[in-house]
Length: 324
Image 1 (cartoon, rainbow, N blue to C red):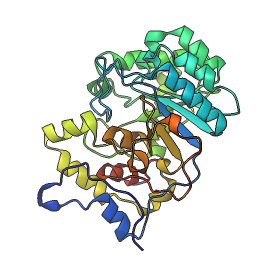
Image 2 (image 1 turned 120 degrees about the horizontal axis):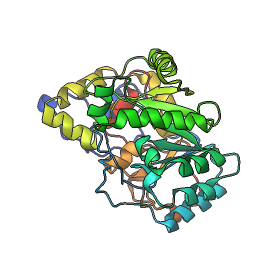
Image 3 (image 1 turned 90 degrees about the vertical axis):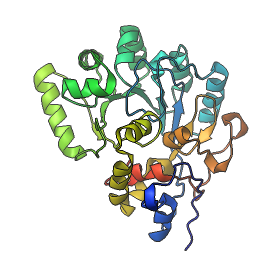
Image 4 (image 1 turned 180 degrees about the horizontal axis):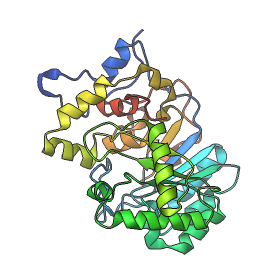
């Protein structure tokens, strides 16, 4: 059966064509990456960030000026109200840096929708207790980046002083009830060109270490491989690790991960209001349905069975247990 997955090349071929394109791998396994029911709305409200992490696929940073307008926020809020989502996931950049973050959260609150804010912790620390109070009042769950229990490893990825700031911020969040209710989850990314270890073993180690050293509690830990896009791709190429890393991803392809991929149930909205199948396709410029669609132009959710745009960065999400 031919694959019904749409495909547009984005990544240059590797030497000797040693990497089989992702769409071809799907076809070889008689698979098609298609949408299921859309239950998650992920919104990137801007690319401004107070950090310049080496693994950032969106190349966010302090110099980025792209920020979502209040008009687009209002359009998203109307769309969300008309199409009930189980979860609305707010991301960036560092979404805390958007002056209208609390306004947007207030517009989205209600209807039993689970709200999530993705934080690098240091931006949340800059905004301090007033923002934490607002997030807690609106029952906004937090997914926080905390890449390593080792200070030097964490700071090599995120910058000097970030580790201590992150620990302090986690303790402050605990004082607002985070880690019990609302949820406080951590995300770990490798600090180099390798795949992450077992998520289960990492979670046990992080919980024991953070509790014993600082009295920090959290709910869950997610361990994700870095996506070879943006700043991380440039680092891979510059360091001579690009081909080796891609081969690791390809050799770890797990066909069983396809059904659980986040892109099957997620609708991603860029800071400008355009739609994508996921945040990584947004970084790669792979529009949903192969055309630029603005949130103001649609009223209904994508239909189950619709093809998902893919490229070779999709190997990241299907390596091992995958992104679920």
